[in-house]
Image 1 (cartoon, rainbow, N blue to C red):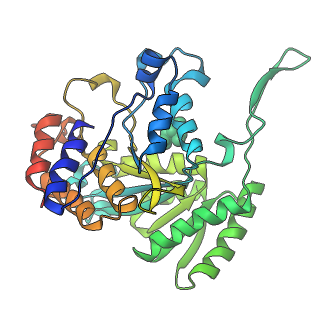
Image 2 (cartoon, rainbow, N blue to C red):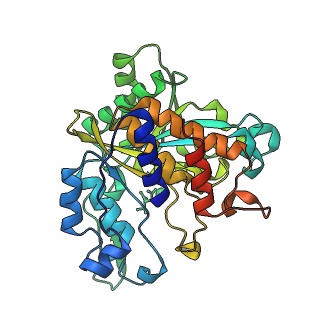
Image 3 (cartoon, protein in one colour):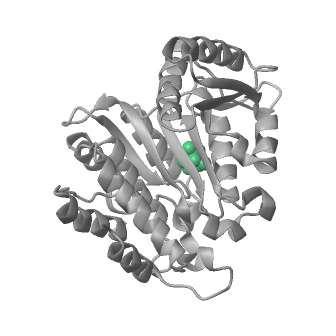
Length: 349
Ligand code: IPM
Ligand code: MG
């Protein structure tokens, strides 16, 4: 996060803007300092802001808490819900320079990967009610989660996917399990209707999630924009992350229904990889995902496309110049977080 804030500051003077940021506890440190993973002071600071640049929230120290109190479930899910952050954009980019890091066959990834995963983030089985565990009369335990989608929730996520696709390759693959799930049957129907209404030129296809998981490893570049419901997106976006080489490179944007003071989408921007507790505090983490998340923030919540592109270019140049944090080094020579950050800063234009 320190690197990302430095990048924002340095870039401001070059592109004539100024970001003002305040820092607040969330996740594990929220539990330690305030007794809750999402302290109300943090939530109200977020309400005052134009965007949230989010760090990472978990760690072994809190792993033995009851599941409902763990940082991920008690901070990440409620903050998404509080701001109705329904659209999660996870760009899967593999630079050709890092093709060696992908577990896929060299010929499959020689030219890199460029796929955008659009995940519905506030509906489906993660939020549906009822959600509970109870003891039955015969003494057995029974747990229930509920997968539920309304047409409006599907419409708004598909609108985001259409907008994203029209700025890229113009192709959308919608992923569901319509051969089994009611929610997926509705999903497919709404997606089909809405895409036709919004933009006839979009090339729309549908794929069952099991097949999509397989196609992603077989030939990821057959996809341009993948759009899917919450849990499928959770799973497929991790798959996309690993075929792109390292979780340390993956940024994400979660856009809400609300607008900020500039009349642009309010959003939360976070690295998609989560914490790396084994290296926490050692100055070894790859800062790229956080820095690239800041770029997405400038693009979507501040309307600063040029500045966003400048960050993305600087990260690309840094990789091209051979800088590698431990996660990217494959046992070769590596640099720490600070040095990687410095290399990015020097390449900002
Ligand atoms: C993610 C994470 C979260 C999710 C967890 C930590 C609740 O896996 O952002 O993908 O499932 O959404
Ligand atoms: Mg996940």
